[in-house]
Length: 222
Image (tube, rainbow, N blue to C red; front, side, top):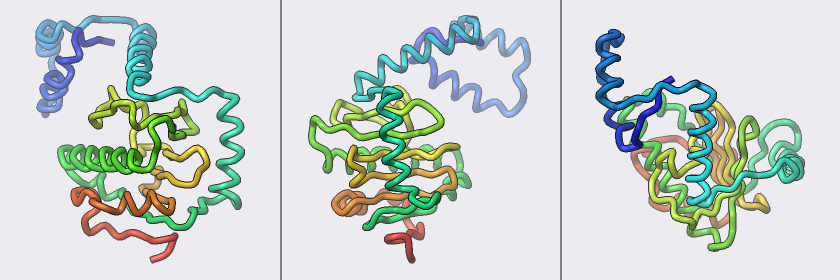
């Protein structure tokens, strides 16, 4: 496992590696190690160190890990509210999209769409949340958080987001503490927004790169 010596070198290194169409030879890899001052560190040490750096950075942007005791209480209410019969029951009013088409786009197009959706969601939440309020960010397979959306997130980068807005392989939910509004990004490619005021705010100025010509449902029906 190799570690990049400086965060500023990450993007150039990724660009170099992604530009390669053939497997990198040992000679080329040696050049990369020297060029980017890569440090060979044990896997476990690297993961723990990098995670600690991320956690400390995320705190600066309003992320706070949920304790196990909080999660148990939240999960019971969450299941009762959203999965009363074992399947998702969206609150009304709600709007839903299928965003699995994003996987068919080029890498550049995907990144552009994901950034647009992320920043649009952030702006929408900021219009509906008081400065002291926190969202619940729930990913039941991994760490869950509270998030103050007013704490200074500026970009759709991993350094500022402990959790993405768009799901990759897990069900994600960004919810008001009372569950009255929020959004859900599901592993099946569906994307749901609900709440009387929040869904109206979200529908204003939708980024065309992600939602243009995308069929959606209102209140669970066409």
